[in-house]
Image 1: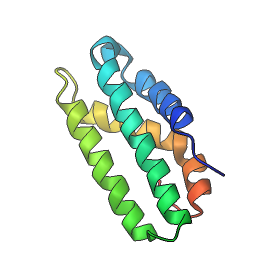
Image 2: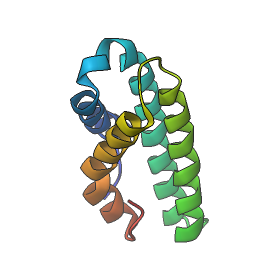
Image 3: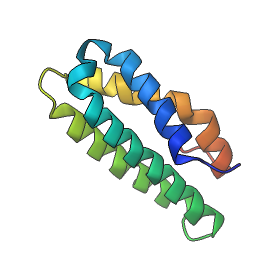
Image 4: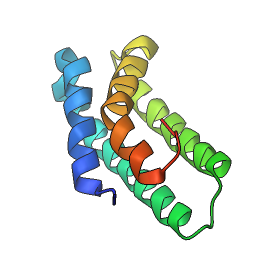
Length: 109
């Protein structure tokens, strides 16, 4: 199974919008950018994993770094709380869990 940036991004955006609907006009641009970055990170991890250039532990570190960066960006948006941002990111990751873990052949999410 090969991960697709556009598909992953769209799935995350649906989850973000569902969790942050009351702030969506203010957060939409940030959410689009962060979803894209997270999706590209998953594709990079998949490519490195298939090439044998990264261990599951290293993949988890790459993922956590990008997740933390996205969390920081979303927290910078006025009116968003840590709880709201965490719920949105968790919803997005839950929406991707099966496809990402299946493509990587180990549990990342």
